[in-house]
Length: 123
Image (cartoon, rainbow, N blue to C red; front, side, top):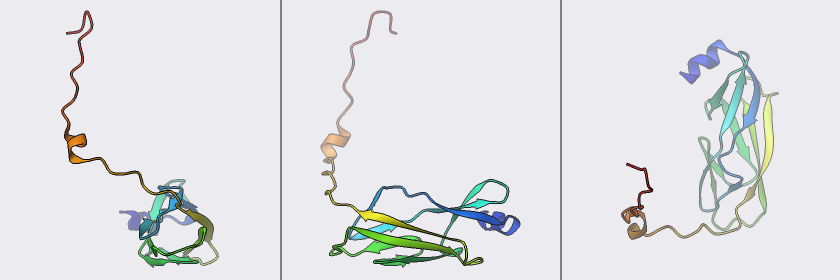
């Protein structure tokens, strides 16, 4: 459906809409790019619409793999519209420094809910 919209509408601008404020090493990081259409609506753009390049890592579609041994502070990403190479967005994304918090154990997730005492007048 998005492809049909792109055929009917001209892309007026490229915008970055990341799901996170940093990239994680040793995994794929999805790079979300939206296109502003001539009708004022936004549509997601993927590697069929964009040329994606980064100062480090490797793209597979919109997913950027960052090597676990990567030691720099940030990566510069450039998203260029294939149909109009003069339209691009270049931006820096920093590398996550703090470790992920530990995952909850199954027992913690599956613990039955605590019953609350009903208040006067509750039914």
